[in-house]
Each structure stands twice: as C-alpha cells, then as structure tokens.
Image (cartoon, rainbow, N blue to C red):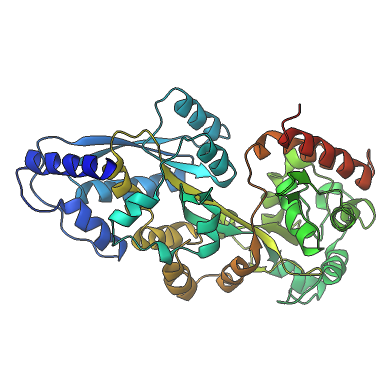
Length: 440
C-alpha cells in the first residue's frame, strides 16, 4: 500500500512539473551526497510541497543548516522546507508537544536519549521500507554500532547525523609549565590522579586557583568510569539498575575522592558545569572530559594550546558513545519528500560540510575515516575516531529519561559529602528499578 501510494505521489509531482523523467531532486540527492553540486533546474514546478524540519542547534550551526536547506531546495525544486530551530534546553519538550498535538515536523533532529521513547510510542516512521526502495542510499556506510542504537525492536527509526565520544581535553601550556608529560594513549587512572595533583596549584585568592581536573557528576558522565571499572548501569533483561554494584561504587568513589580526598578539582555542582569551559579557556583547569561539541568554543579561544587524549584507562577501555539523530514522523503526509530531505542532510557531502565548519564527528565511515581524519586539525582527531571502537551505549530504554534524575540527585548529595557513596547508589538503584518496572 505504501509503495503504491508513493508511486502515485511521485507521478502527480511529475505531471505537475510538466516533465516525464525522474525528479531532479531524487537524482541530485545522490550526487550531492557524493560531494558534487549539479546545476539546479531552471524550471519551477507549478506546485511545491512544503515539509517541516525541526532542529535544536545553536546559532552558528543553525546558519550552516540553513545553507544546507537552501542547497537542498535548489536541487529539489518541487519541495519547500519550513525550518524550525529551538536552541533552548526545552527543545525536546517542544518536539514532544508537537507530536502530542499531531502536528509533528516531517523531519526532526532528536537527542539520542529521546529516540527510544519516541520510537516506542509509535511517533517515528520505520525507515527500512524506504531505504530498500532507494538503492543509492548506503546504510552500510554508517558506523554499525550507531545503526544498532537506532533500532527499536529490530526496526530502524532514525540515523545519526553525527556521533560523539567522551575524551579528555588538556591544556598543553599548563602541562609544560608543570613539567608534566602529556597524557599517553595508555595512561591509567593512577596517571590521571598523579597529573591532577601535579597540576593543582592553590593561590592566595581562590579566583587564582589552578585545578588539575574538573569532574562533572551528572550521571551520564560517570558511566565511562563505571564501565571502565567493570561495572554497569542497567541489567536490560531484568530492568534492574545496577549502579550499586561494588565495581560501580568503587568507580564513583574514585570520582568523589578527586574533590573531597585529593582536592584536585573545584567543588562545582551539576548546575555549574557550564563554567568548566571558561575555566579551561582561562588556564585555570588543566584537564576536563568532554566531546566534539565543545571544540568550536575552544578553537575560538585565543592563546590557548590544547589537545585531546583518550580517557584514562581503568580495568578496561570504555567511553560513552553518543549521537544526535534525524528521524521522520510516522504520520508525515509526504514520506517520499521527507526521505529526500533526510537523505540529503545525512549525505557524505553534508557530513563533510559540518565536519569542516563545526568539527562535527561524522557518523559515516567514508567521511570519518576519510576527509575528517585526513584533514589538518589543531587537535588529534585519531583519538576521536579510535574511541568509537570501544564506545558503549547509555541505558536508553523506555522510561529512562523519567527516572535518571534519581541518580543525579544522589550524585549531588554524594558530591557535597552529605551521603556516603554506597548508600547513595543503593537508594538511586532501588528508585530507578522501581520506576522502570512500573512503580512510582
């Protein structure tokens, strides 16, 4: 039924445009994905179909996305894109409201944590049939772990426009001044602590303090440390939260000790983490954990010499593998046109454009291992690329975003020294498990 409906829709567009060949936009999307820029057709169709694109990006990225949309419209004269961008922290709330009102955007950018809940409630279009209809769409070019993360109950409901991994950023000038060796590929937790101690310098005025590291105790940023120590977050078979295991508790205790025992990081809380980049840019923090999303801010900083290294290794290597996805609304009235936009925004050409302009880490292997890795960059992109191989998925299951706050609340209390680590993690695990199993 859907294939037949799509064929009829395509034929109607062809008739309205007064031509008898395949739409230029369909062919152009493939060529644009390869990096070429075919000349747009001079003929304007009698009727343009309007579709909506929703994103939640900052102003600079919004402007670049507008460039991509303009290119798409030139190559697809039968389509007009209404572009909505919600850069604030309530973007996903607005998106869910639009979906709840049965007025969803045709193509939408989704935070990785919201993909499963939206797929589970039937809000997203199954992409497998459309991909099968378009032999020129190379699903195999996307990084396999990311494709697996984009499936829900075996069906594909989104694809990543880029990926991200946590790595360690470090200030080379501070390391040089302290006579400390830069982090190596195989550095350990013990090395991390030793460097943090050496790089911490307390001044007469607290405003002059230099810190060896900074720790964000927001739950997801603790996951790599827990995994590295042999622990886990969730037993998916039983839906039991396991952050109270001895291995997980030992990892969290290590993070808490950086502040309370060793005093090598500032006592900032979750709500103050936005200050971290400013501290790092100002030469007051030597190391902080982040990802590609912070690179543009650092590249704009003057007189700052920095680079990236893998996270220090525990009992095993691990980092958090994240992504931001594009998806299509399940009830879109224009699935073919939406897929054409979806394909264009995920094309190799578009991903290379965003990597060049915004340092976005591509989700396509051909781009990540090709122009992204080979380009001259002021930081070690190989670290970013290699980290994908040992990146792990957060516990992205239905209901997780509703219960994750229990862990964040206890992490805050542990950070302030108000609750012992094992006690806090035990309480968080109990509340999360109860919430995921349908309790209050």
